[in-house]
Image 1: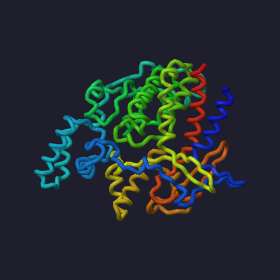
Image 2 (image 1 turned 30 degrees about the horizontal axis):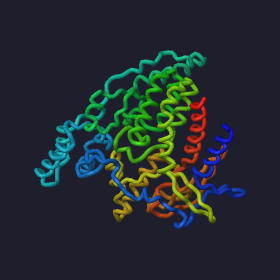
Image 3 (image 1 turned 60 degrees about the horizontal axis):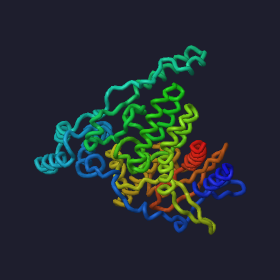
Length: 411
């Protein structure tokens, strides 16, 4: 029965992950005509990155971000409100009226200082309780310099640990951060909150450092977010809640179980792992017809309006090379779709022998990685299709992990 179940799911992988046209020599994946792509109607409605007209869209966001009072657009959208959004918006309108709709940079900076607290205000000091100075793996490193390097890396967990203040849970409406009940390890730098696929490698490192309690808490955070919004966003901010990142939750759980045998956690949360898995199969696949056969193609696809809030001024300025609003909207969606892929930004999306010019972005590569070799799909997709992301491997890995976890929970 187990073998039959596994065989059925593996068969699902081959048909549900992507369009796979196996040619005798090249194994090329191609979709060449506009009629072959049927974009689901649920993806055509364009919404802002989130509903907040402070952190995600609107005149206030545009005015503050374009004033460039900070070197990084992310700084403002990570700040805490000093009062509720309606009051802040009323004060903003007052400022705009008094400045005749043309505030100076100093006016905007004064408004932000008076109405927002600095970025990072949501955290309190925290050192992981399960951190240890000399985890066992250090004893296996005989080279003195390498052992010191590994020890220094182990020390970094204390620097990257973050715990949210109780006020975030009580007054979540004043923050852009998404509340989670347990402390987390963050990537660092401008990335003050958790990030989805970054956490996979963080968790692998934590497990090597024997920080099992911290890992369990981070996994519990993730499933609590799935329970709340239906999937895991790109990162732990509300302005990320229209896009995700490569689906790594199941692999995270798998490496945790391999290290701890904590099947009780699995039994309690398997339904939420299924829920997150269903999000990808329902919202990140499209139907494709090729040579008279229908296929389900997995892709990254972010469909919201406007610039990325965390890179607002940069996105807005680069969009000015486009002539129409439709072209600009498509450009913004391409940027956010590339961000959902996790490869923001790299040469992975460059056109072979192409230029750095960005027309309507109607050049989407389908890529398929198969065991020990990598097979690019040198085809173009029609306009108005988001980047067909190369997360075939990600979804494949997700299927495999899901099958194994399902079997574990039934033992």
